[in-house]
Image 1: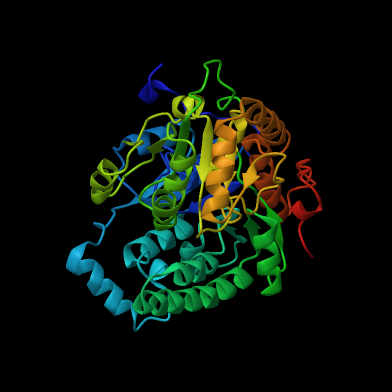
Image 2 (image 1 turned 90 degrees about the horizontal axis):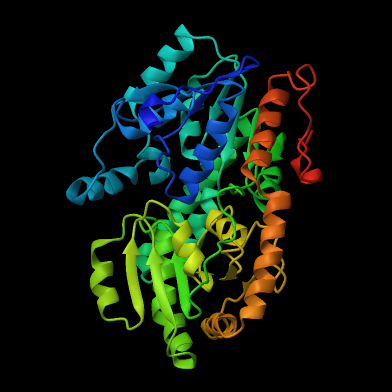
Amino acid sequence: MSLTERKPIQDVSSRLRVLVLDEWLHYPPNSGRSVRTWSLLQRLARRHRVSLLCYGDPEAEASVAARAAGISLHLVRPFPAPRGAGLYGGLFANIFSRYPYSVWKHYSRRYENRLRELLRDNQFDLVHCECTPYARFLGVVERLPKLVMAHNIESQILFRRAQQSRTIVERIFFGLQARRMEAFEREVLRQADWVTLVTELDAEQVRAWGVQRTSLVENGVDVGQFVPADQRCESDEILFLAALDWYPNLDALDYLLKDILPLARQASPSARLRIVGRRPPAGLKERIAHCPGVELVGEVADVRPFLARAAVVVVPLRIGGGSRVKILEALAMGKAVVSTSVGAEGLAVTDGVHLLLADAPSDFAGRTVGLLKSPEERLRLGENGRKLVVERYSWDQMAKALEWAWEELCGAGHACGVEAPSMGKEAQANP
């Protein structure tokens, strides 16, 4: 049956009427953020009446997929992405705004007016803001519970980017943006009735800001789709898997190509790096042409074949927040992973048990080469990683955790028999 022929998934036990605010439709799920949002919403739409307000085209493939999953769409005509003079003009104009650029650029009267219309003409039980920058729109929501899904502590990412910046101008700019974002996050998260976080580290941070009601909805993986493959991996193949239109991933790739890979190939000349990810920047292909043993694949419809053939998956992130879906997908397929501390941050993984951690280039290269030369160690780590993911990180478990927060916030949890998620004490609401 084709996508357009599929019927919406409905369940007679649908209970809550939830309005979700987001930027766009996360289909196809080709980045960690998109995988997360799509995986959760399409599961919860089976049990609740989920409506989504975002920018988009009603005839696009993503819209067809969302409606097929039982999600009601309320689409706002998108604006063209700023480029060239328009981008720099926006950055200059933002100097005079109290909002950070990543909040300022998402605001439009068009979106706010559509939200007002929906609230006036429909009955909802809850407004769910799917990313922190869109919490700016919650000021028009009255008399309804408001939940914010904080995928990251956004200010933390900006502070880290300022620290990694190469010029004084960049350090000043991103430092200013980080301070503005922290002020914005403190304000909107304290005003929300509930905040869900991806990691306990993030939860501790927002509680320190005075946010009272929090719970965890961690990142996850489809453990039925991401399974260890029957085919043998290439014993000398390293995989870098990431969305290539996000700066922290590009910084990680630059770190890998410039500082880590030369050391790895010096120790193991047969080592090869394959780069997979959506929207590679124009100059990357030319750069790769001058790097021996490196192949740029770019965007693919299915990452699993590339994970299957890789001996080692590397995550050399230096800038980031939340946690990495790509690590969970690799572990689910029984792959050996080498990551920086930032890359593995927020996941319940142990160095030497589920994956290997390394921050210095020589350590990262050494641990990667060690795994290339040891099938036994790769197998041990892969088995441990798979076991962890199955026990803790399935999307079905995460959907239950979000559903529990919805029900508790609306005062319907006990009446509907929804139990608290069993991921540990950190998943419970804080009084």
